[in-house]
Length: 388
Image 1 (cartoon, rainbow, N blue to C red):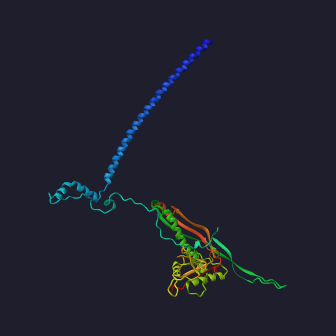
Image 2: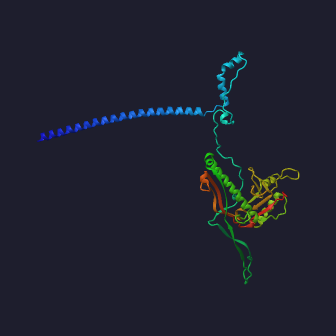
Image 3: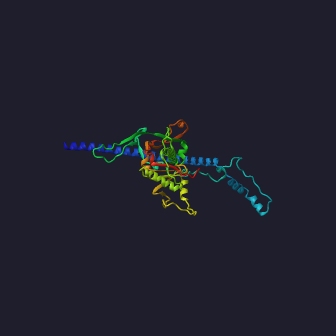
């Protein structure tokens, strides 16, 4: 019985081994077939690539030959080479004249592409050279706050009656009355925009940053005009020069007038912390001369090594925001404030008018601000009197 089982097992084993060997042989044949096909495909790809490279090179040479325009120098050099023998004979005295006709292009416009060797490629500067900006804006002198509505209302003390006083025994104490007025400062939009082609925006480096900076400067210039000289009639803000106290001093010398203006602010219990004048008036102060025609700044004027000027300890800010021959002295931190409903923003948009059709981009700058002036007497506005 055991022998029969062994014999059967050996028969099965022989069949299995035979099947395995057959399978190996079949797989080897299949793998060899795949390898052969891959090698053939590689050979075909190489042939196609070589043909494509040759065709591309041929087309490139043809295009260059068709599009190349010879300049005068190249044409002249070619003509000299072709007529080298006749020119040499002329040099040896064997001929009286030598000439040739230049085969140049037909009459046309003189351009860099035709008359200069090679192509001149345009290279843009890495920045846009913008016009200079104003050095001092009123926003840099005033505190800035935020509001959530379009109208800022603040209670303002405008007067009152009575004062505190010592009490006489058994008598009534002194009564004090404050007059409080609710004062409105409406928020107004200050805005502007420019339209620019998408191509210019894409092709000129730094154009985006240029537009952001220049539109911001344009906004600040308009804001300066409103904060300083706005007449209060919508959509205008109410400006400082309209509400400031008028200069009441009697001095005629520029620096003396400013010192008296500082005293006038202080007399109202405010603390002057800034003097705003035009650069031309700053220069006039710097050029002050004594009776001997020698430059001599008044003792109250101090100039630091960086050119900063202070008068009676109050810094002087020169800005073209204020007209020449005018001055504004004030308690800038306490007297007024910029309240923003919407801060200054610069936005780019294609969704404006027919921009989409014309590939234009609109760039807008705007802000919505109110300008409450809490204390009119915290500012003194005057005229130097040097201009008739």
